[in-house]
Amino acid sequence: MPEARPGGRVGQPAHNGDVDDSVIYQARANVLADLAARALDTPASVTLLEEACSERRWWLEQWVDGEPYIAGLIAQDVQDALADQFGRHERDGLWPVCTRCDGGPVHALHVDPDLGGPDPQWVCEESGQLVAPLGRLATT
Image (tube, rainbow, N blue to C red; front, side, top):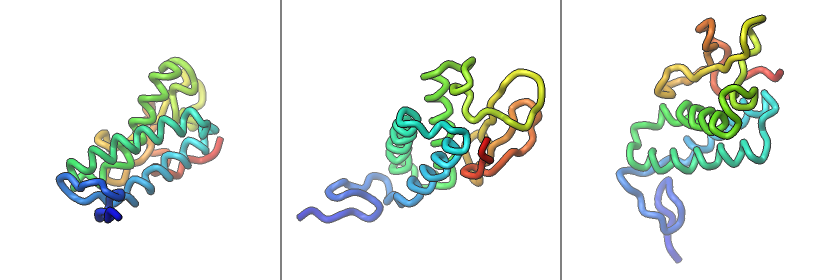
């Protein structure tokens, strides 16, 4: 029977370093919580999240020191995928929509810092104000 590699799957070789899968799982949980907070935890959105997690796991295998960036990068990947799927002018394509600004056009939040971490947080694109840490968006 093949042995599981540290941080990997059974029979899967480690590349440039061992990957701590809990980093991916925690990032997935945070992004899923934020999707749910904005009622976008649909099968289609969760599929996009799973694809982002899979791709970023590969990225993390190549650069183990990138762990602090994974959660924010996965959130950005899902943001981009939703925008590509629904369009940047549709509400679902603007996930997560800012609910703090009154008046003006509907706009999205963005992940700060731009490279996704460490300690990613949602910031309003218009005002620049902190809205919530990743995984802690308020339900609307």
